[in-house]
Length: 458
Image 1: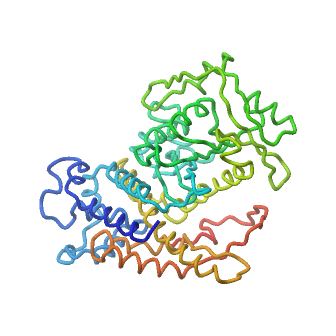
Image 2 (image 1 turned 180 degrees about the vertical axis):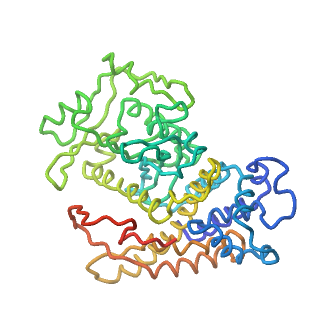
Image 3 (image 1 turned 90 degrees about the vertical axis):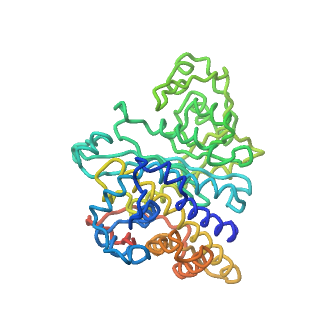
């Protein structure tokens, strides 16, 4: 994305945080944030976006220095901060991330596979929450014999693996059997339905990437109807047609999946229960055409991938390359948990938990704008050199550098263009070599409470 577009995006985001319409919509009651107080609506939003992972009292003391309005007041107590933020709906933070994503994809310059496809990976992960009765009542518990009664939530997100943008994420009750809990596929369904509101699918070509959990007859029909392409890995025994393909010597073939079989036509894979309690019944044709590709892995075994794109649109090698890029979402969960520390909550209420979760999501997206710009500059520097290894910007350190600095931007203390240029230059200093083709067996010699490699930066 062009620098001018990025600066405009940041300016638009800052203006939206300061807007009266957002305050009117996302305060819990009309009486809140009407008086001239130190902790205004916009200041509280910015505080949440500043990755509050340390002691809340320490964070408030540090952040107070960035606000001119607060310098004439004493630093607010953590009790005052918690009470004030309880007057903000968590949906406001989700709205800001949606606002960011809409603005981002409305502009040109985002990376695309083969200059055509935006690659969106889907996956889920469990998020550990504080063990509090109110949170357990809403999110549920996790019991595996070792972590009895641990409060847990389920996170599913759609992640742009080329531009490193968290397009959509949801934090839901963990217990799928509970009336309030949703399965990973159901949460994926809700995000897919909302995706056209974030990205214009008539102008943009998207490929949704998923592991072996995602392929099903429902998606083979419904996703192309919504102008969405898919690349899903499946087991060799996924269905009769795939099993027959796996037993053959074919590398690439179009499969005709027979939907006249009663257990398929009336099964849950077609008539899916939706999160709102309804059942999605599709008028699926008797035959669904799906392309199956065989990919040889490094260990010599076969991997099977299903897609709706033919060989003219994607070669077999490109299908394999796209699925390999799905690993970018796996590493994004590592950044979420180890760098952003999304499981390090200071809130004790459902509203506060969801505020922190979506606030950190938006902060990570803002940080990625800086990382991508610094990476472009680094690539230009390295193009004239003959280095043995390519270099990439260290995202872990970049996230840590954005902390505290984001306050200067969103509070208007520093113009967006100067802030962006200064931060990009700072982040450019921290780079790491990429040594490709290295594979090591995973061996854990000893277990420590804190990782020796993943040291915190926020």
